[in-house]
Image (cartoon, rainbow, N blue to C red; front, side, top):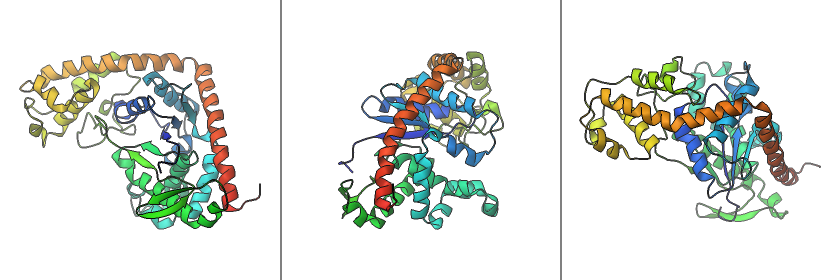
Amino acid sequence: MSDFKPLVFSGVQPTGNLHLGNYLGAIRKFVALQENNDCMYCVVDLHAITAQLVHEDMPGQIRSIAAAFIAAGIDPKKHIVFNQSAVPQHAELAWIFNCVARIGWMERMTQFKDKSGGKNAEQMSLGLLAYPSLMAADILVYRATHVPVGDDQKQHLELTRDIAQKFNIDFMEHIRRTDYGIDIKVGDEPVHAYFPMVEPLIGGPAPRVMSLREGTKKMSKSDASDLSRINLMDDADTISKKIRKAKTDPDALPSEVDGLKGRAEADNLVGIYAALSDKTKQEVLGEFGGQQFSVFKPALVDLAVTVLAPISGEMRRLMDDTTHIDGILRDGGERARARADVTMKQVREIVGFLQ
């Protein structure tokens, strides 16, 4: 894979408000990665309609994600910020991958089983089943080499590798007839490949931020209670209210990380403080160990407001200037299409389509 030009790709769905978990688990990582990598960050609006076909304000949701990217520090001039539906090559490659992948692969995806509820699978849309194939196309239409993902997306990235590998094997002789392939190793086996074996970038200070109302559930945009999450557009008073109302237990904070075991809510709040302050949990407990939540929560409020207020303020400013946001997305879409078009011309030749 080292012979493929390094490229980082990731995307965020425009479904509801972005929250603290999205920022700490993904967007802040995107910002850090842009310092030393060629990056493409996508608002994956085609994926959004697999979860909810009809959206009240899809354009506004798309702009909101783009605004969050930029407000958090992503540079749309040096890198590419765009929305998925602006690049039709994503859908074209996804169809080819639908024919490469196998139904059994899709049905084994944990997220499909969770969303379909097993018995309800026949009532789910075909798009939901084929979601991972489109995700593979999102990445591979640019021949991206690295994708920052959370643990819950790791299985989908493994499937992306499976699809890339099967395409490379199925069309090996066709690839050899072109100048587009590269010799790589898959395990110990040499393969003349067109698509790279994408590597996940997993980790970070807070890859999983949990609900403020239930520490065993991931913070989610779809949670019925707005008190369960801190939205990136929340103002200081709202952030303060949500943290002060966050579920805790009656015990003081421990002095050692091991003392957080079995205390999901305490562990979550300490983890949030650690991530926002770029400290370890042990460093946070070194400062607050033995203190009650009546002391810790106000400190967490001050920290969260300090970090998030500039981002929320810039997001509001950007959302008030839709012409500027639309211009960034339009420019990003043009640059993304140019890259994707190169890939698809080559893929069409490899597959054997007339052009």
